[in-house]
Length: 352
Image (cartoon, rainbow, N blue to C red; front, side):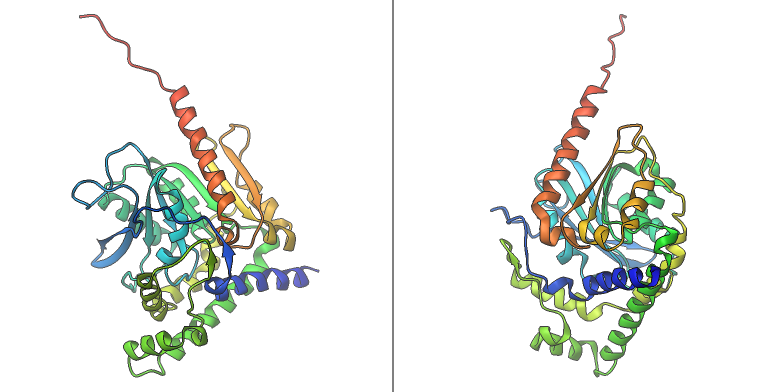
């Protein structure tokens, strides 16, 4: 029975990984403002990490305006070719409420690769350094899939940096999922190795990029056709470049350490005093009910700071149900603001 359920579970995740960019979906429409995002590179250990900032900028257009908004930091799923393009509809929909930072970790998007082991500790150290260099004192972390593992550990290691957490179908550990996740790891790694082998049949990366650009569908590199949202030509060019560089040695190393990463969250819960919004895929819950129970085990409802919702859709929920995702995030953020105001104690004037 477990083997049968695991195969169904595995198929959903591998399919989601392979065809994410070709799934048509209805999403939140773009606002009328220019929302291309501000690209900023941060040097970590001699390597360049690309970040993209969405929101109101200051007069110099070099960073966010000082308007009191919370900073929302988005961390991607495993092996996503372009975190910026992947998160862009979500980032644009939230930029009026937050200062949004999309992080493209080393090996992802247009960031550099690295030979440094992709352990949870190393990845989180790099995320911390990115926040430090961007002068982010505190933030809300938004994680998807495997970055939920990194995020939960980040909260434990750097609690002073996080004042809220949004988990979108984050990866969890449960003995009932172990077999399926192990199989998933093997299939993803095999796919990454085959993609790298294909890339190596071309004389140069430039030749490979030209081949992809001439026929994106043949290489699985077409941008998604999303109702209510239109990617720009610049987006297409960025995605094709990132796609051609994906499944690189850095990412393959991260995939190989997936099981090790999962083991770091065995029996681990979010702090009861941290505000947590968790949204999980109805498709995944239907395929394997333990997906729901494993998420509940990460939360503590006694303090009133944790909430969980099952949202209609697949693993990349915001592609099919962005409106509901945005509504839940906005409602959660409003409650955070209200609680903060209710708990505020003004300083008493002291007579001279």
